[in-house]
Image 1 (cartoon, rainbow, N blue to C red):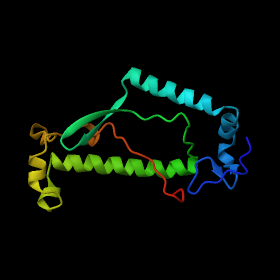
Image 2: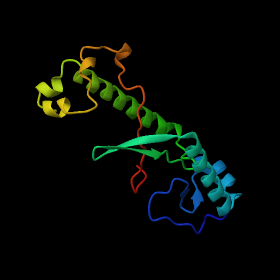
Image 3: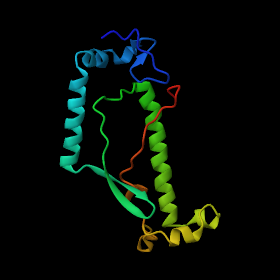
Length: 157
């Protein structure tokens, strides 16, 4: 496939300056061998598999819990080792912060004492479990699973 005439008005994960990014050459070569129909068929098959397996996530919105099918793009996002090292450090930091926050809510409640979080917000939460107050889970891990979205801005950062 000739990428030389392709232009994007924003960041493109695959193509830069009319050519595949160097680290994405093998993916670009593979995609060049597919037709648009091939890609669409694979996307439909992936979506059907997600549906058949019941892979969902819950959106908490306006007091309702809405189950949504997990979005799966058949075109992979390739992340270089250098990029991943930075993302991984941020994700680990976020998980440590989340677990420390939850630990505080079920422990000393400094966020309430310091006025960071209104006490009534915690007391009125349907998800707060007072029976967990004083519990210390192994290694301080309250949240074993977390979903984080990776996004880039128009410049790719």
